[in-house]
Image (cartoon, rainbow, N blue to C red; front, side):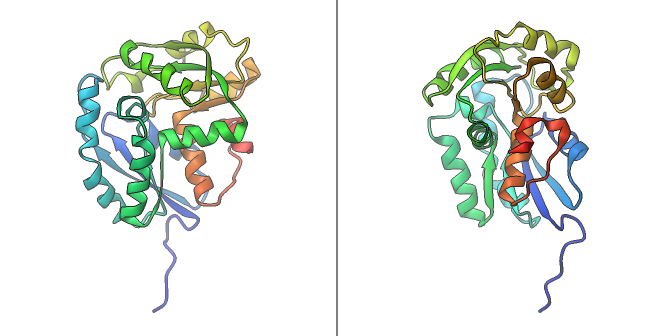
Length: 243
């Protein structure tokens, strides 16, 4: 039987597992996607305040959503939630990605594996960290990174509890957090959360600070494209897309 190429996504089809409160990642990806890539998303129900209980409840839905996005015929599956990395048990993230790939036969990445690989590609072990997370969850990030041999030279959070508030954060609210970070020993600035809008800021921050910027969504798109064997340079997304 003749195999027909898809009309959309001739170079690759990216499937996203996205928490339902996240109204950012799809518009950000589409705003910079190179030609002939396609993007498909399945949502995980999550609403209310960001707490460990909410994250565990969301994680319980992953099996069904993986099956759903795999049925679309994607070439890579991205689990697009960063905070699970800090809340679930050690090693959960790597195990979750491996299971998705094993169950579907499709390459799989996550917000954490993408961030990890992006930092490695840039040769970064020492960075300043900014997040929108509630203080109690943000506090988990430092030991998480330090046990993996990263050095956090400084960190700050917007301390946002309501999950639907993070997508409303614009430059006027995020820039003061970045400005307050001590960058004197930093090799990079890392901004976390897949529902935090960053694509319009990356190039400006890199220009003003002289440091690479790595964000959750930027790293996810980079990792998905590298998994597909694509090395397009996307200028608004800074230094990461040159490696």
